[in-house]
Length: 160
Image (cartoon, rainbow, N blue to C red; front, side, top):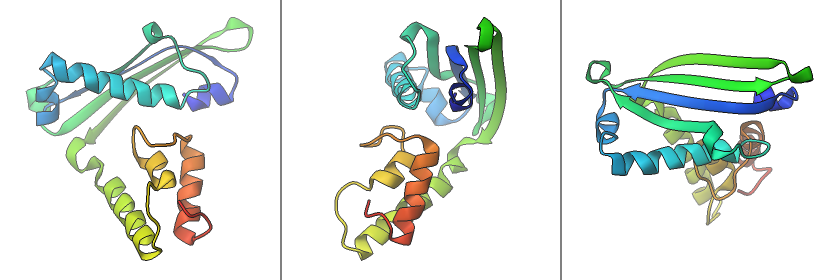
């Protein structure tokens, strides 16, 4: 989405549809769980846009349980926009990833930053790593700024 906005392309519509065969996707068959998951994922996407899109134009979330996929999550992403002179532009992407271990590296980074904070006797939320690694951090930042702040936190140039 940022690649569109950075180039002056007006975002019109987007969706992200996820399928998988693990327990998380099985649990999403219970529509009471599906609603909160979809709301959470949509809010995370909306929070990094230059301006939020109308709710009818954005749809993010798990879409179906496919048992034979097992722990493989497949993501279908579509972004539609309008460029210079009203020219339409569309992006479609398909990504496949092993869902459970996918967050392992992120969790390790969060633990390392928490250890640094503890060693430095810093309490409270770690805004930089939270913004870089969490869907709903206390302070939302765009990814490149969040990553820069994490690096500065690690080097000791930034407290949180």
